[in-house]
Amino acid sequence: MHLVVQIPAYNEAETIGGVIQEIPRRIPGIDQVTVLVVDDGSRDGTGEVARAAGADVVIRHRRNRGLAAAFQTGMDAALRLGADLIVNLDADGQYDPADIPALIAPILRGEADLVVGDRQVMRLTHFPWPKRALSALGSAIVRWASGMEVPDAPSGFRAYTREAALRLVVLTDFSYTVEHLIQAGKRRLAVAHVPVRARPTPRPSRLHHGVWDFIKRQGATLVRVYASYEPLKAFFYLSLPFWLIGLALFARLAWFFVTEGFALRGHVQSLIVATLSIILAFLIFLFGLLADRIGDNRRLLEEIMHRLRELETRL
Image 1 (cartoon, rainbow, N blue to C red):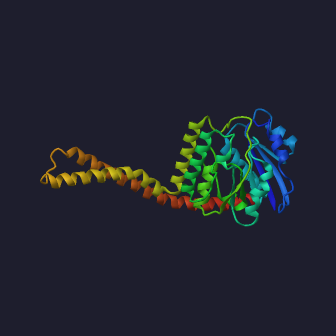
Image 2: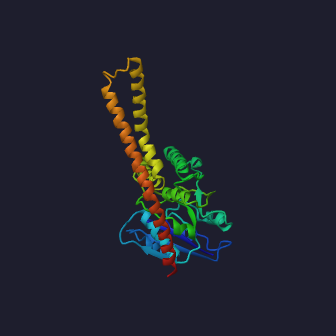
Image 3: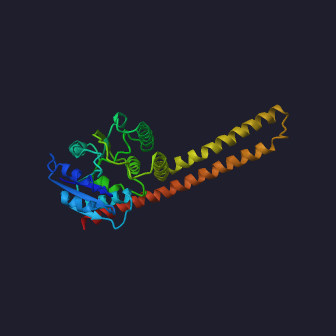
């Protein structure tokens, strides 16, 4: 059993060496551990520090392409290296590499395709309360969207089987955490979670610029991915306010029609608004039907892509 621990990194020379040295090289049930670092265009010598600390493979992007791209580069490289399991680990030291055996245990027992490390965010005193509250709210929304019980959806400390890594892809340019969970839920992959330790980091996150930026970008990712996999539901929710407005106005007009002697004088504006609302709601719902049919083609393309990726890793 070959485990690849991949570490996407951008300007993490200060911490990545310690993270690599903490990774256990002997794990029960694992024959080989390979440490793979993706240097996402760092300017502080992150790649050189990683090599000196014992990284087996270092891949460098010529320019900074963002966490999502670095993560996908690492996953593709891990598959080419023949990984049976892939663990994603942050380079800033937030996660304790000593938790890797516990993280991969559900996979080794045959219980999961994807395991998420649960930081138990509400207990983390070094997290400010707005961050804890947002994390809990985001996790609840992802649980609803994916149909899976995952208490810490934003956690990047994860373990993947080879099959899960082949089936899940990153299509956004922000982060992979939410996208992968929704994809896993819609593709009926077995997802588990285990408690892990989370340590204070020496600097704020580089993934976003403050709370509102995080909400905006993570929310956009969530809506986009959910709409891709549940277009009919997404367009129905979008059309629902117009259905309600139109039906409510028609009900009001029906009341006046009966109580005022079958006359609609003075209510023409309401009739126009009600009619336009119903028409708009119907058109939005039709777009949902069309998107749902397109979704069938997307599922076929995903299956083709999965088989192509599998063949590519064997060459």
